[in-house]
Image (cartoon, rainbow over all chains, first blue to last red):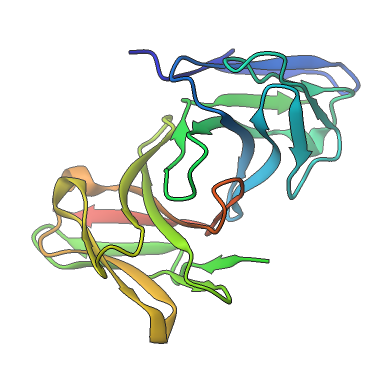
Length: 113
Length: 112
């Protein structure tokens, strides 16, 4: 049972480069989201989706794009990487009920030099 | 907007001692509350959740948390700490299930 799968696990980018962080879930969850984790700041919501074709911004969306063409996949795009985007990124999914917890992937550690 | 405050970014306890990790939330209505644990280089795992069924919630690995509406708190406890409990713990709240708000985390160290 794979759950939420994130790739890659590690990535180093130069300032200005673009890349896509991949996220896939096999639990048929409607809700998917991206968080970034920085020391002393907890997890902050970047973007989320309540279903295929529907996305919305979270707390820190600037510099990131998302799309949701299928229920399973929710990629996060960095358009022009900046050192401030150095972070650990987590994808999470859940059923569309308020009491359902998030299921997390193992994260992608991104360094922008 | 929701917010979550975790008092104490670092907590150290001796093995066998009581673990108490504090979480306070701000919300105009009782939210859904969660505690997650994160081991090094891993994602977050659910420890327990409060969904209004009972104010004392039991989770995995011997942890429990009590919802106190009057204090807007959801503190996490474990009677006897084990070395394997060393990890980072996050409290989170949600009203709708679409947006979760996380505290800044508490790193638990267990001293042998």
